[in-house]
Length: 196
Image: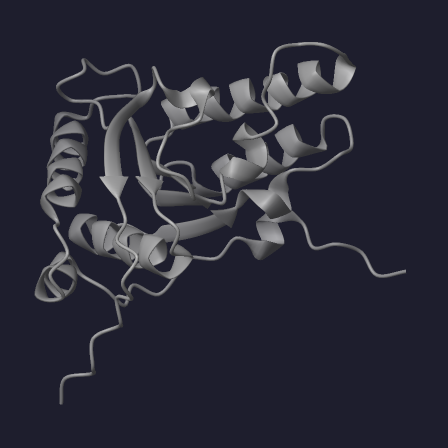
């Protein structure tokens, strides 16, 4: 019987193929990404921890838009601006129907990148946040626990955490925690041609 790879085995830093300048040259508005990078730099320069004052905290970053390719390009550009590693985490692969396994998978992700100042792109965050509801039964209770666990770990993360969703609105569980909202355009952002 084949076993499913662990979250640690699937977690690898991504190659950074885009920069903010590349995105700007395609007509994309990089103002929000530049502001996020500046906030993260201030936080890092001050040695400020996760419980920073709002002016120095990076906070939760929400990417919304239908193009996963463009969400990844924007995350690559942000990581390149910060000279930080980028890890893409597909939450639909981390979420598990087995009790406690989602939290273990998330713990593995955060423990793997601890201390690296990494940019974490939680793509398809709808997979987890779409499950959070009012508590009607035990399944709802555990879905809410998973979301709460993720948000606690995001708050304590020493880098930038990006939650990417397909829709325009933030899931209700995120409304009070989102500091940055970045609309990702639908048009395709292509990697730059190699210079040479």
